[in-house]
Image (cartoon, rainbow, N blue to C red; front, side, top):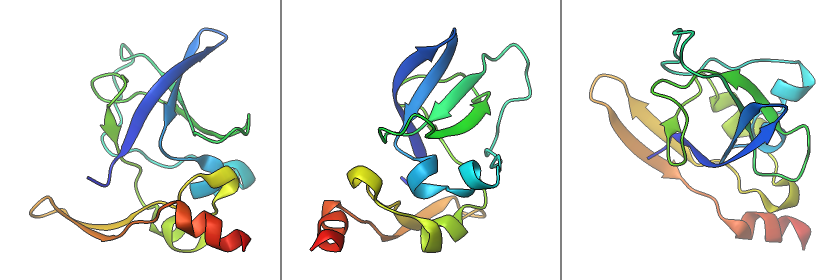
Length: 130
């Protein structure tokens, strides 16, 4: 449905790390290079909501997007969205270690309709190698 998703959890010094299907390394390199903290749609401002560190699926130890309070709490299967990420989806992504490129979708904020424009799979990674 176009949103990012928590797929697993790990712990580092007591702070839960939400492993997601997105990657700072592969999908949002300015998070590491700039540094830059992307805004999350509907991020909770309630200090009683536990903070979670959002990390990516690559093997890179620094594949961390940042610390967030996910509305309703973070759990496996929870969906969320970062704002203003089209510039990454279109030009700055890579397939480090086989992590797939992000899908490209259009969301109509008036109707809440989501139109999938293009999805990528492992063949994009494979075809870059040969």
